[in-house]
Image 1 (cartoon, rainbow over the protein chains, first blue to last red):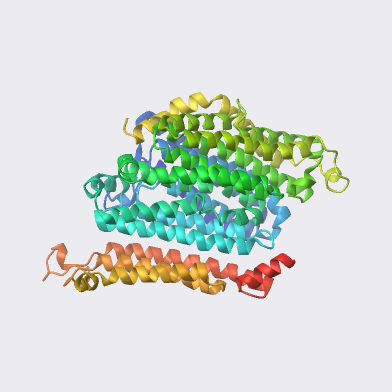
Image 2 (image 1 turned 90 degrees about the vertical axis):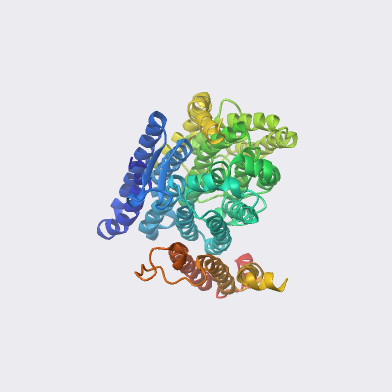
Length: 491
Length: 123
């Protein structure tokens, strides 16, 4: 029995508890403690991924109670991949966060870091748990910390956070209701055990109700069109640091939940062949991709534009799940990874620009290419990847999604992916043009200079990551994602 | 027909509570009422779990020598434990929501959604 599955969320949870105590003693040590906690968890996650690669999945029985009675934590290819992604992005963002927190909400530094680590603990918990109810608890831990993190931003932030809270609670409650139906039909909460007992209950209407409630719940949490209504406001008014933490990973973890339900708990034959769940998801995703891209073009505020672009990008992931073939899953997982890097980088850039100039209005970005050259270089790379220019990472996830669409015969999906790349090009090149060709304006542009090293290094790291993931995509797909897809689809 | 309804009335009640809760969250303009709607919604789910634990003629799940270890004599304790956890989650959610509402009220001097949006537009 390996302890690694437990150690990943536990080290984050413990540091979240330690931070307020350290805060009482020496406030300026808090960022270091937070980074240490996230770093520790990242190390465990990497270690876990290698262990999974060499010896198969790791299982940990909480309190020594064997499943299905006890709660089981497990680390397989999929959850190891997600755990590394969450803790890695979390670590990079926490390093970047210190400056922008000190500038935007200086009196909230201790609660910010405590909540940030609690959020990461919740997200990693969702990924490692093998128990349906335990997943609900972690989902709510992560969501509650996200509501609080988003509320400390600008003047309008509390209202946006309250709306998010109401809709997020509906999502969580729907999931819980689905768990209830599952429990009363199968008598078990352990994912593997439920999966074993379900096939004989496929005809039961209670299981159909469970599927409906759980899928709606996760769709709300992952902001799948048309359940995305909470997202644009919540993303626009939150503090930059909180946003950079939440935007790249939070909705992806809900997508992970959907993948888990679809492939581990209910099984592809049920949701694809017996109920039309995956095709509904695919059509919603197609609508969401177009809607998000078109809305992003119409925005003036940089963060709001990124928020709508998130709606469209999460729909790519949903499309990969909805196409319901192994290539689609590979595309979805690769896009989760790539998008975490691209969006993380873009939101960090938004934070850096706000830190130096205080603006987030796109027309005021003129001349930033000269005053903040390195930050904007990172931005350009991430933007090219969002558009899907090869050799950046964004191209390859779209490539796999297109292949999956062709294989599934979903030609509209293929056309929409290509069309949306053009739309992405419209809204990113509009900014690049402002940034590089227009001269700096006297007020905002000239006084700005390059962001401090602490903020620049994470931006450049993620930007380099975008390029690296693009070049190394064959290795990632062959070594990591293909085995995951093969094992989940029972090939 | 009547029997089918009476035998399952608990499900109809749960569904009714769910709908009342959803209505409160979506249609009410007052933010406190939205929060109350959320609580009703969650309570409906709690009741759904609790009703699933009951068995006719069963007693509290404490081992009794006279009843032996036959599972049919005891109600299922697991849903109660799950819901105890879910109640804690719900209390925490309500707490966070109330804290947000206090901030909103201090800023806009109102908890009516229409008035708040009006004041947001003006500022």
